[in-house]
Length: 249
Picture 1 (cartoon, helix red, strand yellow):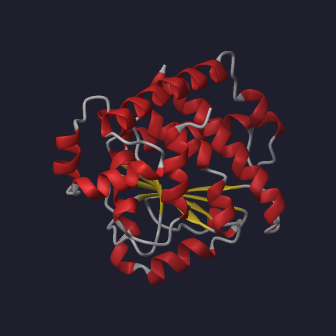
Picture 2 (cartoon, rainbow, N blue to C red):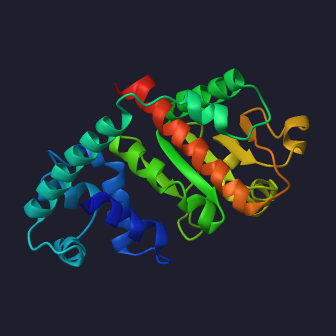
């Protein structure tokens, strides 16, 4: 089944334009659990959209009426919740942790993941930064977190957002240069205010304190992109399992 949220995220993550399509997608992500009671009038009023803009958007998804779109979104949300529930029956992170490459003990990695989940639970917004393919690996995590009611977006330079202490920023960078480069080139975004999670293969970030609110997960490797991608996938799967078991059950 092609979940409607996945189609919305495909556009939101891939577009290069800050147009009303992008803004409608973002509005849905940030009000996802409110859509079951969101009337067309409220959608237009709260999102500051015109009726023409809304209907142009839902037409792209194959709908002719807002109510039809809204009901399908709700049905697909219920379907996704059921999928997650079935997938998590008997799920345990222990085997994943035992088999993954890591620079720490199994118990330490389990606590690392648990700490990340605590940060995500307390956040109002999750933002992911990195190269195109590595952050694309997060799509399942992104979909699950939005399903759980946590807005999760990829950072786009054309969207002038400003971060604060309620944000969690996940930075994917084998070398760590992406985080340093972002801090230097995007000073107006104020990433230093947010809780940052750096996933890297660069051991220097274990020795050097990046900042007081930057949590570093360093995995083994010498900036090997193929191996790093598998490591990222495992970490994201661990987060999905832990978050569901800690905060959603």
